[in-house]
Length: 432
Image 1 (cartoon, rainbow, N blue to C red):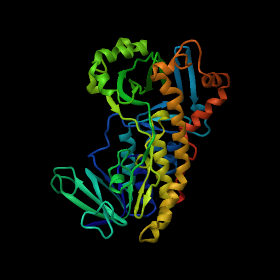
Image 2: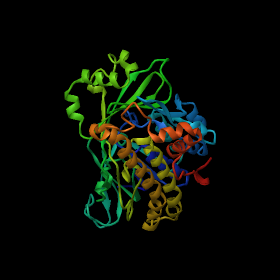
Image 3: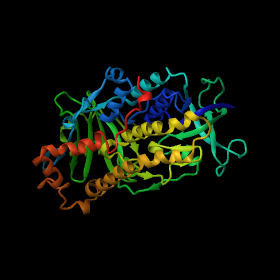
Image 4: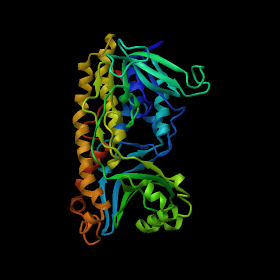
């Protein structure tokens, strides 16, 4: 049986940032990523100003700047009553007054390359965490055992890094296990923790449509007669999110791809001339099962959950990655002194991580719930939408009229989305 100081389940943004920071703090850490690489289609590719500042603090700014990227400085809405600007990131102070759009795999590989330079860091790819080890439990752990003392993981490769055949089970002892394996966290479930869920009115279909040089730039939301389309400028294509009613995926797919293309041509007419190319079929349309949930307790003795494993966010505002990264930075700063002393991490320290990140999570999720009720729900619900400013062409909604009348107010949504209510900074011991 192998041993590490900290075992991190999941090699997404939260897991990789946490692993890098702890390794730079002299803590032995193992990140277990179930896939062979970081390539996932339609994974969140937004890197927000607060994360860009963090990369600078870690000495990774120049390497990130060298990555191919598209930058967004404003977010707008295209209503039947006319265009409106929702947020202006150029009004933010500091060198990073924009959101960078970079394939997430490139960001994660950059973090992995930096972390691999630290002697205490190890990244296991094709290593899927399937269970937890517990103090005093039978071999392999038990769901209601004592302190978490490590993980059980399975090799997914036919001939992986460890040289075992596919399906070989391993045990890795650790003084602390951190769940960073996303909204469907298997590790969280193995710990016996279940989140409280909040109802959401929508799911999202993600797909790509070719972009022309004459198209608008930036990111915009198009609302028209009960339809809601998100469009993110990726240079040579639009990354599109079509909002559908929660649970309507199967019914709408049964109507056929031609019917969907007709919907897209109706909601955004200037896309009609290229919809014969993409989406070619529903194989090109990926469903995001939108969830909004939160653990009441993020920790157990020997165990901590952060990021989406602790609080799944709605795609509204695109802030999920930003919040997960900030969780990781706060966790590294708070955990490192206890880890450096050796032995088990006191649960009071784990509680401090949750206490630090609790109110930003609740605040952002509260804003998302408000947006679900006041905007998304009204657009999708034809009856509730009758007479609504969001679904009629006669009148621009009041919040957008205020932003139009007082442009300086556009910095408020820009700061909330781009920086967040409680930005975290790299501790001095993690900086070069």
